[in-house]
Length: 243
Image 1 (cartoon, rainbow, N blue to C red):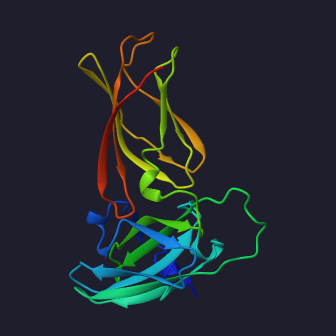
Image 2 (cartoon, rainbow, N blue to C red):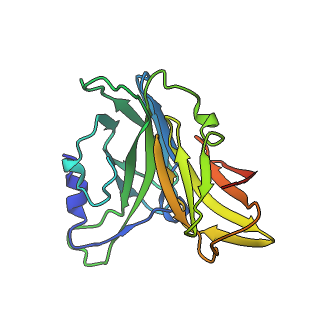
């Protein structure tokens, strides 16, 4: 049944909107944290359009092109398909279904994506061009008893500048994801920015190319970075970086 609404989009124009301010069906948060021990987690949708919308909701593992009916994730969303009148809100229930798996020797947070697709209903005889807007937000499945705390993961990041390339290395030793929203280096009054920093997976290392940075370099650079917390709020930190 989950494919029904997408099939209605056949022959229409589909616009995938990643910025919630552009979407007509607005989610009440920018990310969803799911503690594995929770029986259910709820979130709220609101129709900000001036007319009714058909809405489909599903979760995937990160491939935005995958059809909802092909997504194999340990979650159920209810209701998966609904009709929303303008100005009305609707609560969604997300339920995690643990699956038997080999015990993890190094448990860590896992990220999924929650999709909300809104479509304007039309008559079968209508020949109007129709737009469907999709919003995607991250869903973080947080296993029980992870070592450390999510709010301490940013301070645990390990930064290092390469000697022979304009590259900034960062290692995330924690069991949590860290979402970087900006990274800037300052040396002798000149700032070098990385425009599209990644989300750092647990126990991972990333290399960020810093355009304009000249090697070999001298002095002690200052790193200024901003990150997003569990509620989507931005936090800034500044530190010195050595070799």
